[in-house]
Image 1 (tube, rainbow, N blue to C red):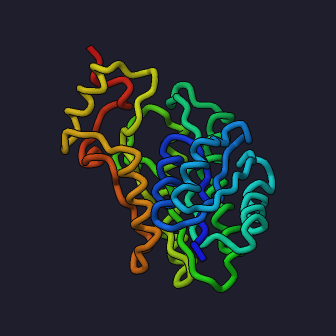
Image 2: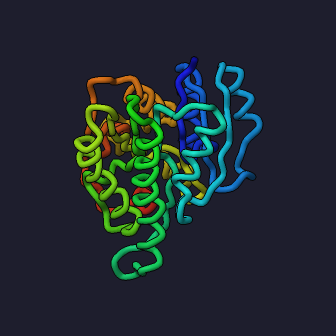
Length: 252
């Protein structure tokens, strides 16, 4: 029987790349999205062609009881508990000290910190005495933060700080690790020329791809002697102390 992975935010962008890599590595997949409209039939077909059984789960992570519901639905759909939890879903909004609000802090903390912690709690309970693994998707700026996206940055920094707590608490049964991506996928905020200049700023003079992020998740899922660690998949960006968020850099 293929092992089962539960991936939040698993239907798009980096989450979809993680799902594809896990399917190729031999995992069945419970893929979460905020809304059912995000379920992608083309991705599901691709994953099934790779041999995976796929089940979509919809739910708002910040609603009371949502983490427990998501894990419970995965267990019910497959008849067994997942042995891998990938906390990939997050929100990302722009603020800094002069503009931060209670609502912004609360939204980021509830989605990017509380939900992964409560999902991990529900995942551990569902596993019983079995062994498993948790991978948290972080951000390479947890090492060298910038003043932009304050609420987002604080939520990811706190999640990063929790890894060692959780790894100690859940050992020896469950391993807990993190993957910290850097700049990966462009949005409409970036021009092609800016993207090329940002690429040249990286110590490795390239940017990580979604497949690079996914490969690190697959490694940690299988690395039975690794816990409490963070892998930075950012072409060395964490080695530099950039003054602003990348969207403000490399412009003409």
